[in-house]
Amino acid sequence: MTQLAIIGGTGLTQLSDLKIIKREQLSTPYGSPSAEFVTGELNNSQIIFLARHGNPHTIAPHKINYRANIWGLKQLGVEQIIAVAAVGGITCKMAPAHIAIPDQIIDYSYGRMHTFFEDETVTHIDFTCPYSQKLRSRLISAAAKINIKISPIGTYGCTQGPRLETAAEIQRMERDGCDLVGMTGMPEAALAKELGMDYAAISVVANWAAGKSEGEITMEEIERHLHKGMANTAELLKAFLD
Ligand code: HPA
Image (cartoon, rainbow, N blue to C red):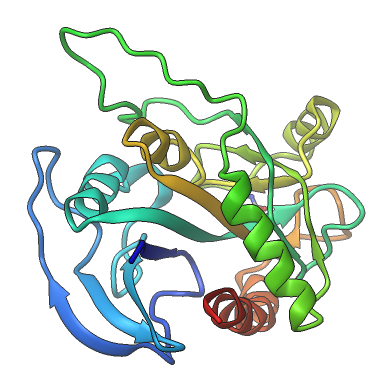
């Protein structure tokens, strides 16, 4: 059996339909992971769930111990990761509450512990395709099966946060080719690849990115759209496991 993990982001601190089997607190050479690793059954498949921002949600994107999270999952035998994360929508299809399965990343984050390869051996992983094509195809087919409209491609830009972006930063990201903006996609994707794990993301649009709509971006707006997007995400995950 291939062990699958789901990393939940803002709006997905718990998987409500998960039948919990056990909870494990792990220590790693890189420090403490964000939360307990929860093993449970979702749609009759065993999965491991991790709340990226902790449970309750207290860890900001730049403070997340990405290495401990990915190392911990590897230690538990995880081979595939589906990472769920809230994003801002930049290009026209990426309206609030929409779901995208990104295929590319541009990393604008800085100062994060972003590699396991720090010592003796210099190792350069191939990162041409940052996400697993196999997992992405399965997610896209699962969405079609349950009639959820998604974007099957998209470029995810990872910013440092925790503040949201300026309108000019978003304009620059759009010129760069970004469709989505989030704060947690990196180094998570690269670390999974360094450890040889398949990794794909479900990006849930919480708001139009800065300057893409009238007025300020409010937490109230983000929460409202995430609520709807995460309900669809839960259905998508169940269809993926079917
Ligand atoms: N920018 C960055 N990260 C985000 C956003 C955003 O507008 N919305 C949700 N996560």
